[in-house]
Length: 112
Image (cartoon, rainbow, N blue to C red; front, top):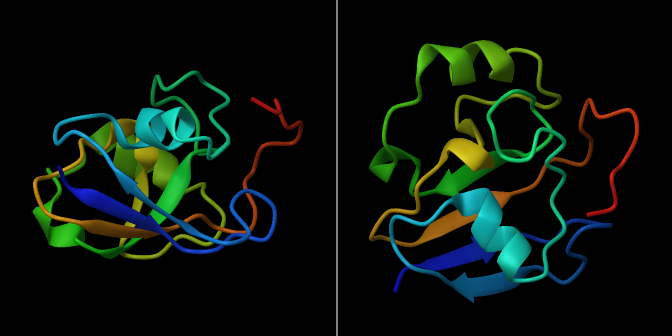
C-alpha cells in the first residue's frame, strides 16, 4: 500500500502524519478516514476548492486533471503548479507527500 506523508498544518494536522492507503482510493476521503479533518464543503463532488492540497512529492504520478478541476483551482488560495483538489485525486501506487494550505476560500468551516 502506498504511503501518504502529510506535512504539518497548524490546525488540521499539527504534527503531520504518515498514512498507508489503498492505491486508487480517493485522496480526500483517505485523509478523512485517517482522522485528518480537511475541509470539503462540496462533499467531494469537485465543485469547490476547500480540499486544495499541494503535492510536494509524487505529482507526476497522478492522472491529469480535467478542465473543471483546473478552472476551480484558479480560485484556490496559495495556488502552485503542483496544486490539486484532493477530492479529484486517486492515490497512485507510489508514495505522495502533501501540504494542506494554511487557508481556504471557505467562509464557514463545516468542522467535519
